[in-house]
Image (cartoon, rainbow, N blue to C red; front, side, top):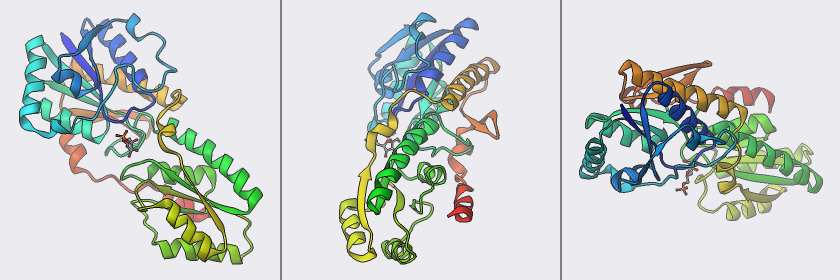
Length: 317
Ligand code: F6P
């Protein structure tokens, strides 16, 4: 049996761990594994190499993805999807493991419908995939943000400032709300918990009046047209000197955390088990500590629940 594997979309720490697990476990079960380069692009260009046990040595501590990744917007076109399915079929690939986020899953679902038995492993720092508690890379990115928040606290408390930290997440506030709990932020603005500019300013003004020395405000990316301008406005109106920091792509790099190493290994092995059982058209997930799977259809039709951490945050802020 020939299986293909790709990583696609934004890279995430733990992708390499999952590649390693899939390759080693599949080989143990008599399968041949082919790694396609840069996600769906590699499938469209027939750019792949056979992977052996040795090909995936030394990957547990390596961030990014050794297969490379890309975003392929044209993969939304049916003719492009058909071309990819044909390329895979012509080479005899019957199964495909795709590691990535939302966009990757959409492509995976289409390929499954076109006769390539596909399994998704959720790999994105955003944690924006339904029916899994966590995606690969989320915890490592969170550790990076925690480190930044701790450092911002040192400097903002010394200068009595309001530190504004913008974190990634695309349309999902999970990184921000987890970081707020872990780092003790006073204010948080996310797609699930939007605060008007006036509300932010008013809260900060209150804190200043209560003699608070400094404040930490974490916001998900894309919530403001111009964060620097908003920081100026806060400075003018709240009494706090506000300083913005955009953490950016640093969040995507780094050696996978223990959680991501464990999850990547478990999910990779589980994906191969699904292949052995003849199950496809599904995404792997983790729920309450167990590795599970759901059909792509269920994943796309189930709205992600708002994190319970918002309630928890209210209790301690
Ligand atoms: O999906 C992961 C992510 O890092 C998002 O948090 C962010 O919005 C996006 O990717 C950035 O994408 P790109 O690498 O294409 O700039």
